[in-house]
Image 1 (cartoon, rainbow, N blue to C red):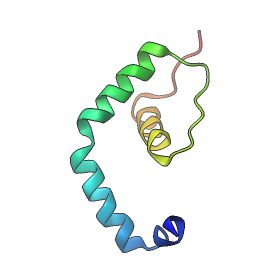
Image 2 (image 1 turned 60 degrees about the horizontal axis):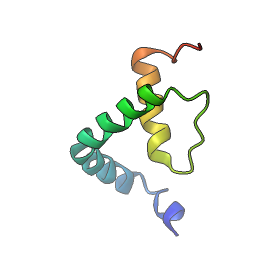
Image 3 (image 1 turned 90 degrees about the vertical axis):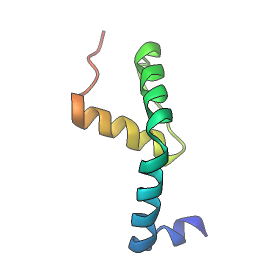
Image 4 (image 1 turned 60 degrees about the vertical axis):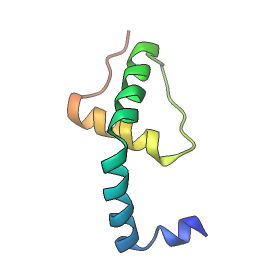
Length: 66
């Protein structure tokens, strides 16, 4: 049901505005955690971490391998 509802572009835009307005503090905490932990790979079962990691990669480039 949720995936079917998310096929509605108007609803997705509304949710994106809401998510962007509320998520900046937790986004920074998540980004800081990932940088400190420095994983070799990340497996995501929810869309939000993928979106945040993708945004960081687009902004700063991929994380260099050790």
